[in-house]
Amino acid sequence: MFGLGKRRSPYGEFLDEHRIKQEDIVKVTGLNRDTVSDVCSDPDYKPRKSTITLLLMAVRELTGKKVSKQDFWT
Image 1 (cartoon, rainbow, N blue to C red):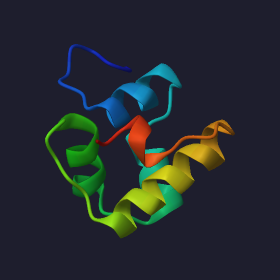
Image 2 (image 1 turned 90 degrees about the vertical axis):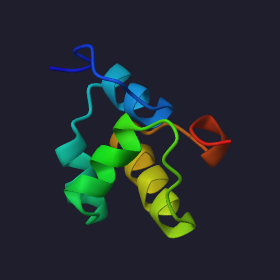
Image 3 (image 1 turned 60 degrees about the vertical axis):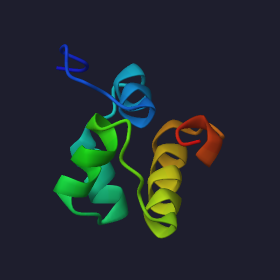
């Protein structure tokens, strides 16, 4: 159920490529489900700096990859 024709942001595409569910990000970060959904689906969504920090920490923990803010947001 990953990337089924949904509109995705770079962050959402990364999750799809690594088969990470949004719910996993919610559990790791403690962020609201709607916030995570917005971050994953809207390429124009600009999360707060504190939210970005949590989102990056979550993908680092779940994938073991070194990612940075520039990988997802300009």
